[in-house]
Amino acid sequence: MAARVTAARDEAKLAVGVELGGGTMLSSYQRNTLGYDKDIQAAVTGSYRLLPSLDLVLSVRTWWFPSSLGYGRATLLGGGARYSLLDGDVGAALVDASLGVGINGSNARFMFDIGAGYAFHVADALDVGPMLRYGQVAAGGSDDPYSAKFWSLGVLALYRFGGGEAPAPTSTAPRAEEPAAPAAPVKAAPAPVADRDHDGVDDLHDACPDLAAGPKPNPDQAGCPDGDFDKDGVVDHEDQCPAEAAGLHPDPAKKGCPLADRDGDSVPDVDDHCPDKAGSPNPDPKRNGCPGLTKVEGGKIQIKTPVFFASSKDTILPRSFPVLSAVADALRATPNIKRLDVQGHTDSQGKAEGNLDLSRRRAESVRSWLAGHGVEAERLESHGFGGERPVATNKTSTGRAANRRVEFVIVDPAPAVGETPPR
Image 1 (spheres, rainbow, N blue to C red):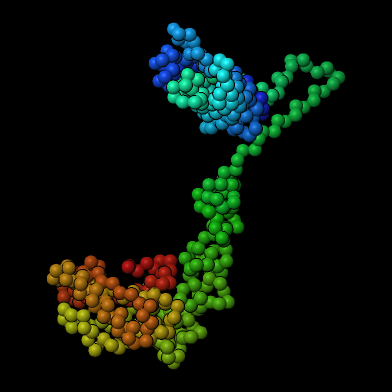
Image 2: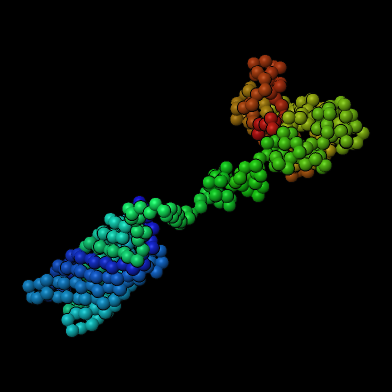
């Protein structure tokens, strides 16, 4: 029923209104000198719906001001507009304004009024509700008896016609020899199509209504982005190896697949001089992939011997230069490692603040050494974590030695699925 009432009201173009209210005079001269304190306001309006929420209005509105000295009156003959907002099943807020000629006795002046209120939809074509209204006659000055400002609070009744529902079917049954004609379907106005993720697929058909499909939509799920299960930057429907990341050495012939690496040392077989023995990346083709001091594994450049420093200092001891050279070789041989984080760690002995500072200085010292030995500085960063991330117990000398370490964590590209080195 509510939908039928709304449709009838929207289709109605013409309306007549009646308004009655009461208020007070606002101008001091009229109140104090002429005794026009209270007012009674009545109006008849006719309107035409120009747009869905905008009516053009013609109005005749009279204000009476009873007084012991004789009543005053101002009558507006004019036109204006009425705007409906927040229109719903219950009612609509109204704002209107009219201007025209104001008649005061034998005088004609410019006059206008402004109103605001709420009209309840009490029937399919009848709205009734309260209206607050302000009126003004514009004359010569504040002491001119024909210049006045006044207000009223009243009730508006608005009847719309020219639309309405289709007539109800009669109870007369068709004759037996004539089959009843099927009722013509009533076409409802199409409802607005919701698309809250703004991807061009309406919510009714969108399998991911809160997630935009993006530049590469999933062909199997309308409105969803294509996935990337192995997190290698190639969407699943284009990835020929959707469960295996392309890694540091993508296969140019098979999108989303890594080059073959049967010994798993991150050096692809096509470049591996020792393809059946896990080894280290090396810029020397005759040593590339052969056993050495490093191995790219688990999102890190793993080292087989630790980096040694002078006691409680950030000075690198010369016996660590070979392993650092191997790290530099691995980086030069693997240009797809775009960003490496050098991370310093200590044991738990001493003050935590001092250990944190020492680990940071040692990590920066290693970063500077690599940058000075052929590795681009923009590929390197460093951080220290003190004793916050032990890998062994700090209760034994062996465990503490293991905790005093430098790690080389690959930041870009991000680790493949299952490889989540700490930052």
